[in-house]
Structure formats: C-alpha cells, structure tokens
Image (cartoon, rainbow, N blue to C red; front, side, top):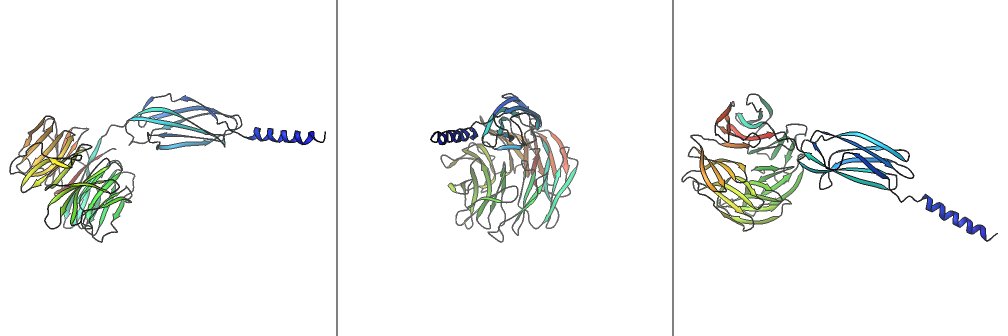
Length: 429
C-alpha cells in the first residue's frame, strides 16, 4: 500500500493538469449577415451571432476589413461571461470614402486562452461621387490671397482662408476634404480644412526658401516640387513627410504627377532651361529619365505605363505620350500650328480637352485618334472636368463658367471680385 499511494497521487496530478489545459477555441455561429449580403455605404449591418465554450467566454470583437486585412470602420468590442452568449447589435457602415467591392466582417471570440475568428463576405456599394463646389484662389489686393469655395449653384461663396506673400499652386483633396495651397515664398504649404480633418502647415526644414513649384494628390498623399532646394516630397494630411527624392544635379522640378507606384516630374536645367522627364517610385528613389524639351502644362494618365504630356516649346503646343516601358515620347497628333496650350482637362483615359491660344478648345480622342473643335472664340486659362455631372468648368479672368461637355452649351457663370488664379473641384469623397 505504501508503494501504491505515490502512484495514485501521480496519476491524479497528471489528470488534473490535463483537465486544466484549455486547447479548444469557442464555437461561433453567425445568424446575420449572410454571406455576400449587399449593403450601401451608410446602411446598417445587423450583426447577430452566438458563441459557446466548454469552460468560459471572455470577450468578442467585430470589425469590417478590406482585402488587405485593414479595418475600414471602427470595430465593436464587448466582454462576455459564462459559457454561452447570444450577441446582437447594429453596425453602421459610416465611412463615406469606402469604394464598391467585397469586404470582410470579422467576428472574433475569446475564452481567455484561445481565439476563434470567422468571416462573412459582404458587398458594399459606394456613395455616388458628387460635386460639392469649386475652390478658387484670388488676389483681392497686393500680396494678399484668398481661398474661396463656390457652391454648385455658383451663387454662394464662402471664404476658407487668406494668406500673404506669393502663390504657386492649389489642390483640393476630396479624400481628406482639404484645400492645400503652396503660397508662401518663405517656405510654407498650408492645408485648409473643408470638413473634419484638421488644417496643417507644412514647412521644409531642409531649405530656408524652397520656392514651391507644383502640387498633386492621389488618394491619401500629397506630392510637391521644391525647385529652391532641388527636392520632391510627399506628405500626409497632417503635413508629415512620408517620402522624398532629390532632383538631378543642375535641375529643378516643376510639374509633378503621381500614378500608382510612380511619380513623374518635369525637370528644368537651371542654365540651359532644357527639360526632361524624371520618374521616381513613391519611396523617392529615381527610376529613369528621358529628354523632353517641353514646358509642361499638364500630365494625365492614359494607363499605368503611358502618360499624356501636354505643353509648349518654341511657341508651339504639343501633345506627347510618354511610354514608360520604352522610356520615350511619341506624338499621336499635331496641334494647331503657331498656337500654344493654355490649359487642358482629362475627360477619360482616351479623351482630353485642350485649350489653345488661338481661342479654340479642341477635343482630342485617342481611339480613333482625332482632334476636333469643341468650342471656338473662348480664352480659358484654367479648366476642370466634373465627371458625375458631365460638365466642364473653366475660368476667364474673374469669371468662372460651367459648360455641358456633351453640347458645349454655357450653363452658368459666376464672377469673382478679382481674377481667378487657380481652380480645383471639391467632391463629397
């Protein structure tokens, strides 16, 4: 008996350890939503699921993720007690910037040791893109500038902000609801809030006077050129630098354009004024370059590897296509002889509007290649296309005009108190 007792205690010890070890995660059963259920942005998902565990339940977490497993709206969490739970709540799809596509409702339940995660695929339809107005820059007095917004009826005007010193460029980022202005020769870029995102002030600490050049924005990032310090830089909605690259020695960057993972820049020689296109990746590392000999007015995306490049050289306007794969330019059509490009807008990947100094606005089509007069007897200096309303906005001096793209008929006119120096359209997302 003396030998049996230690053996009995040893067995009891191992049995207790085995019983105390929890290796089974909770069971989850989803009632709603069902797989591939369809919703619109601002709809509410009714989430209903049950959970069970053989020992205990401690907490749950529900979130909506995109294809990259990134949460797109705030999740919902809660604590649990006992071994079974029935959870039901409404989960609003509150993010206006969501684009149409498949998302993943992720439901996680823990028992304190093990985590069970299950997914429901849902399809979300985006909010239709809608024009909220136009933002313009004017200079009502010497060395003083204003950023104003004009409503879609082109009647009501609201002042966003005013600033002193110079002005170079403006861009409205509808994703962040910000108007970003390069306007201070002392080295500042100002971001003005058009919604809930805070305003910011961006200063280049790398040079006392960068002398700002062009600005562009795609999605969530801004790209600027800094001719005074020979740099290009990217920053976010708070003014935080995210990437940067140096221009070629003896060159300064003017226009800048971001497509996907590439950044295309126009760079000018400080002595000869010859120009070239220099391409970077979005980390700021240079990829390739090619001579251009063009004073660029606009870059537009044809596709991921081809960029419409419009500008002037020696008193003549040109439309080139830069082919990234061949690292060269070709000219699909000759523009009006002896005329320069004043401004241009992209209608779609195969259609452009090109305003020229001969008082004609041309419509260029890539397929089939053609150049037709869209409107004559006009002198626009800035032009933007509003795709949702199929409308063209342009400026002539102090006048902002809205035309129908399909008929070229004048729809509305707004007259500012002084000449309009820049124009950018503002959307709901």
